[in-house]
Image 1 (cartoon, rainbow, N blue to C red):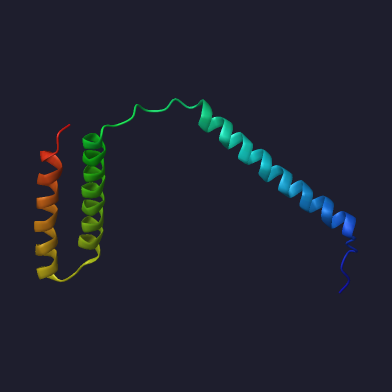
Image 2 (image 1 turned 135 degrees about the horizontal axis):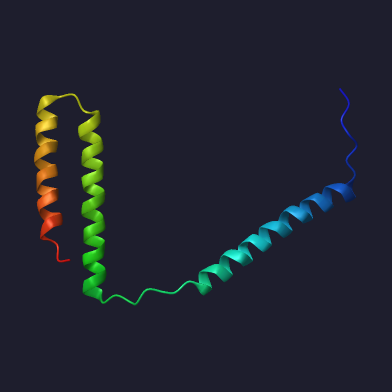
Length: 95
């Protein structure tokens, strides 16, 4: 089995080209982030409500996944109850 000859200069050139493209990609991402409009700053209360909402939605999603994968009727009943509670709490959040 013969391998193609790889000299140090060929290797360095290939590595440099790879690193260069990564640098350009990072610069493009940074420029894109700077040009995107920022959303207005949230008050501490608004930020807390947003975190609470996201937390409840994630808990609901996790409960649904557990409900779909579970086969024990007692566990299913408990998860249904938890799901109903989460739905009530999500509905009670201010819009």
